[in-house]
Image (cartoon, rainbow over all chains, first blue to last red):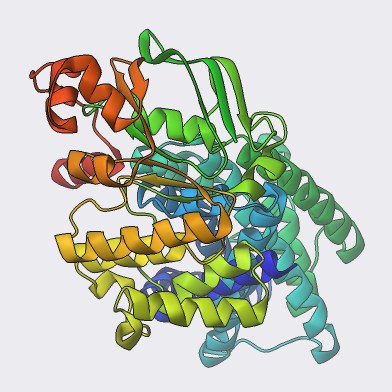
Length: 248
Length: 259
């Protein structure tokens, strides 16, 4: 238990100490929010989609979360290269505990990032549909964060160095984000895109968040929660397995 | 305490450790010497569960590190050759992290952290970030950290690299104290031959992945008909300089140059 706590605490300390990282990773979501939100707003409204900012905010929050979460997972590569990973791996605690502590830490950090974006989105005119559903939104924020930190951990357990990082950004993170329905509604899509969007775990995260924040869920809050939870558990298992196989 | 039989590690077609066997008794201070790239660190990684052997058997305090990893890990502590501190944490936080990870009870933990940080003269810098430390300070902190929990076996991979003679002497006095009071078994590597000669009760010399000599410093000198361990070492391993594979930090440096 203590192991999990100290590893969680370490992630948090590292997060709060690198102010540039916090601010840096807010830039992109905010740009999306302002440029796309105000840019596409009128068209979206004309097409009968309603307020685009309300639609977009859950997507942009998800964006902030997945980038921070994946990066937290991938930090294992830095720890490996700077040697700190060895220190944790030879300690007499199970690798499962180490993985859980790290992942919870990363997920907490990513959730905070998501919450900051939510707060900032009020500045561009976003309003909650139902205050009572805010706790549910936080649950979705944390689930998305957990899922993608576990994914980052899994990837980092297999990669030896940061060389493959760009590959992952371009062929995994970007498609996951753009094809998730974060930016566009899932109604009336061409069939191939609909299939892809349904296979993208982030779709359920974005949709659940949208349901809780803007009362506009495509799949429904129940299915979103269920599917997202199952995928998160699967990713946690894969991440733990790969992490337990790390050799130095 | 440590039993190794026919231990082998192959990386693709390169044999880093070639069927070595040795044993270390409880309470012994055992030096593991060899030129760069001889297989010292690879052996230590296999003994400490970080790397799986290609073949051969290891027993650490009666446990097989490939099967009973947790039991084996409970038996030892290690100071690594290359840095393994978290630069973004303070000296104190690094110590605390280690103490909690090794489940040292709170009162003992705070007492030992204070004692050890004072011992390596970093107590007044305890709240500074490790990234602001010099190489020697990091090394001292690393050694201090390895001593927070008192393991049955202590692995030291070039613990005194880059430290001045005063600090080296200071640290060895402490480790010898632990060895005598707690019967702690010490397994270490070093390039300082006079250090090995002074503290080790037995020495193994490894070269090209094979153990070429084992014995007390006295025995090694007699065997090679030389007057010091350094001469004995050179007589056994020759005088050519060895090529070495790039380590983690070298890789990082290379990456920085590429990008």
